[in-house]
Image 1 (tube, rainbow, N blue to C red):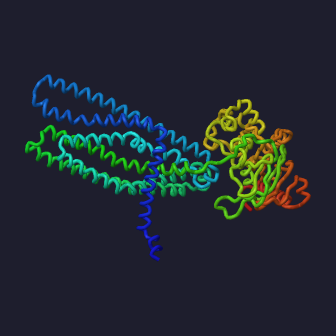
Image 2 (cartoon, helix red, strand yellow):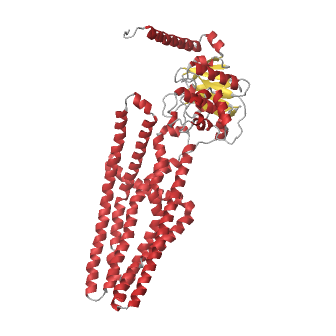
Image 3 (cartoon, rainbow, N blue to C red):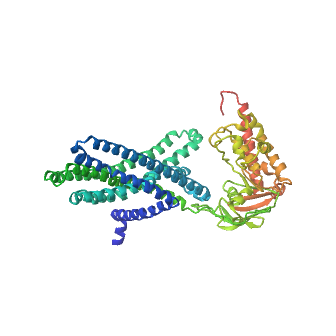
Length: 618
């Protein structure tokens, strides 16, 4: 019972969170060093340069001491001249050293952040499709774009500035002890108090920074999702709903920042009060010593200046904790991403021309309750065209995804030329397989750039030839700038059918061995559909060696397929060519009759609408 109560106690949970926070701090600092380790020589050089600048800063109060205790009392013009020249040359040299340290530390930080961002992006592109299903794309993008930016302050401070501040503390503390050991104790007693204040706020700031980074990612994800689906948002008049969703995240971000700022403000206030009390104590004790002849005015002035110099680096080190916690939160999220396992491929770099097969394949999507494929087996010979048909959710698109290794089956295997596709190098496999998805994805840029995506070195003639095969050349030439027309984000300036034809041209340009068409003609009008079907059947499937697997919604588009596989609930229920399946009068014939009735009903409704007189309704 006591153990249960302890587990349910909020205090116990908070204690565990604090412990985990301290462990995470040590772990992430090690990760920070791993980030900086490849640049250790530059880090050392910067640290030496900035430390040298910090050491020069400690010379400044000595000019004041000499001026008050020697130069001014002497009244000699020559001594004033030498003092002025030395003063000017010293501060000019110090300014040059400070500028060099500032510029090179900034340049170093930008290089590290850029490298981290590229490393995260490269790794993101290697992750399996399942990883992208676990987290919104906007959140993943935030990890790559925003989180590295949050590292900037921490890296610059940790890699360069912090070393200079620490050197300044040591140098100034040493000078104070040499000048007057008793008075130095007044300064040095403040340091443990400042360290205690900073330690107290360390874990709350880290946790707050992490929650803020996560909220930024959520905001990015929601805004990206709404913008990328803006047509749906407007079609359902959901602008207000989307504003409310984004507004909740935005308010959470504001609230978290305000809470965090309370802690930062309290920490800064306590540090400033403690530091100023140190100045007050120094004035009282130092003034007493000066009044009784134990200390000169110049020495007391230098002491006060050193106190300010000492408090500056000390407070910088203390306030570095704030940057550290914010950067650690970002580094934590980046580390989570970089620790995700990338896709793994085999070692075979040559994919043979051979049959595509699924052998007793069973597959269940993550978090799904029912399997998508239940022991599916089929075989498509080289150069043949096979069609996968069936009701929605029958497993057709899943089968195509397994062939391209976007997912791997839990049981059974997918083969090309008798070899399990998991044995092939991933890039080699995917160069062999061309995919035209049901909802084609186009990129911001021109029509030609989107087609050339399959082959960056393709010539304009090759692009136009692929476009003609996909029946896309005609409409492309009619666009304002032809192949150089900008199509907007996700191809927003093209119709659904135009996007499909550009996607098919892209697949054709790839010149692959296996062509997967996932209901690629579903958004086309009947005339364009027929032309594209003729192109695919006549120019590729016959005698080209290309193996075509067509996932069809309109059964009229796959009547010429060599083999039609009918799937239901992830299982193969029948197979054969069009004539054989109609003669069998099974599930395929049933689906065809159903589609014919739907087409006839649609035509009847259209005819009735045309014949009905204006102003009357049924």
